[in-house]
Image (cartoon, rainbow, N blue to C red; front, side, top):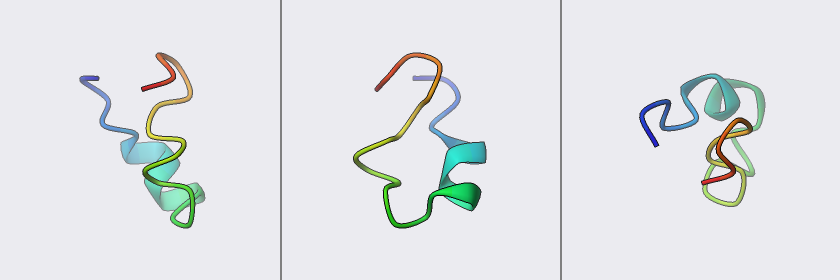
Length: 26
């Protein structure tokens, strides 16, 4: 995933690995 869940990591630091990318679902 190109996004690497950058935005998700900041918002969902706890679920960074489980919810890496909200767009691709990686």
